[in-house]
Image (cartoon, rainbow, N blue to C red; front, side, top):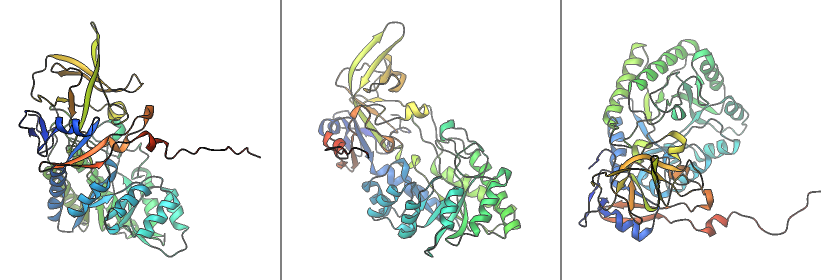
Length: 440
């Protein structure tokens, strides 16, 4: 079976169906309905432990800060607490969900290129571990504070490195809305100003070059650029880089053709690059933070859909439609993401036709997988889409008044519902009805 794509516990049930976490996926689809997202707790925990254990060998210390934007829920926060990991949040709401879920605020980092004054207030009031300062506007808001509150901070710099990934998820190049550019002196000017802001204890530097990265040479180049900037900041400003956050970005296998590096290799390249680049410039080794997201929850998640209509266009293609699509997974349209579905009742069945798996939403671009070799599919069949745990539910919408799917966590043969399927009442709950007020 295609092990790189599937959760660590994937196998076959006694009935021959695809199973995850000791649970038969066909039975889960019948019990909870589809679309359904199934997360394997063992895979999540295994990935977090790989990062945590690898980083514990770093002599200057550091932390694993799970990137909440990949997928966040109270159930996920509970796992972070149990696995002794922190979180990287990018909104006030993510911050509140993490804190309400019991995550210590001191283990939370808060990046973002346009934080509001209210979000900064909430971050400082909560006592978060550190802010990641990412704009002149943010510096202005912080400089204007008069309450005496203070927070640790990292300055986000753009090292000018573009990794081998989709342009829409590349964030460390010169042309990016994120980070102060090293080239042209923007980062040095921002650091100089940040050091003069009373509300900030600037303790280090942050970078993040992109996502779904399968080749690690870009990380080494980015670390070298960061170390060069740290040396210049020491010489010009007397600034010591005590902490470095190297972001995340490690890719996963969405199809059998992709072979991502293991977490251990990612950490080896990262730590060796930091040690080499900082030591070569006479810089003390910094505490090191990593911010994995996709590589933790991506391979843990499997989306289940039920097959419905079929449309054959002679000489063109055959469309097979399912009961989900772009409202629960926008990644194929947004990033050109490619998936490799499996037939749950026979996951190793021999392909006999090439079909395009289409969604149910009223958009011609609502396609999950184009031209995919598949066994014969019948209406009522359940398809499993592996590697669907990251950036799917977190970007889900209610397009066409679609109801966002239920979420189940599985472990040792037990399935627990952690998010119920939405209802129309949920969609209407925020609507305001009643008498209108005529403007004067």
